[in-house]
Length: 326
Ligand code: 8YV
Image (cartoon, rainbow, N blue to C red):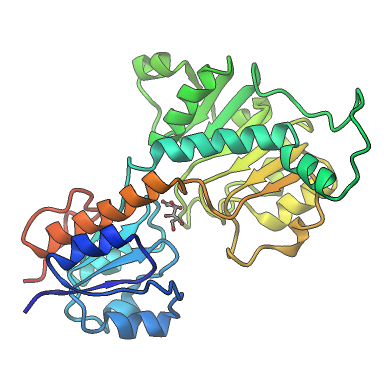
């Protein structure tokens, strides 16, 4: 009998075709989000799963899935996966790094430019019929070229953003748990700063750290207070890294110039305090959403699942210490 695999959210037909060559596949092309109870029930008789970054996989669920051998995240962030619980239950966990790096870096620059140059505010103004012609001091923004960019979280995506920044003649600062080697910093033209110094010095702060209990509310009222009044905050990492309520208060009081957000605490339930604000660009978690990249993410997750269930080594195994179930 073929192993049984759940695909928890809608994917591309080609992804289902890849999986169907090896497995009995239960798909969800209607893209209905499972409740935790529904997800546990759907996984109870499965050997593997492709899950989205909004599907929580924890010990309570794994207790109910005795056959489960692999959970393949369709995404690079994996804070939805309780890795110690997966390892304790003998379940491999994988993610999809690298394939989305360039698309997220592209989108990050799109969000930087839209926020600094008030692009979406201008569109809302025009669509509302308020534009009566251009004038010299209309919707003045701040320049991106030549600005000081501060990147919090300097992994693959952060370093790719830095490469794009050099094309804008930007001064590049970064903060990371692990400092790069001098040669790596030189190659990227990036200068290491402590978190607080980066917040004080940067014109544009970009958040690209993974989300965890340790990085929860990395940016709160105190950190925003360190930033320049002319500074812009960009979050393309995870909701929860920013204290959204504190950010709303700071934007309302114009303690910083603006924010560009692709992720939110408790998304998709957006804090309503953002909605009336003109100095925030709101994007619905689209940073990796180019068609080629989302297809590559789904294919990568499928390859991880196939390798795991056919006796191979998943290319993107997050818990190599796992004692694999037989
Ligand atoms: C999500 C992301 O995967 O890769 C990640 O960590 O945040 C996104 O690319 C996206 O929500 C796809 O559903």
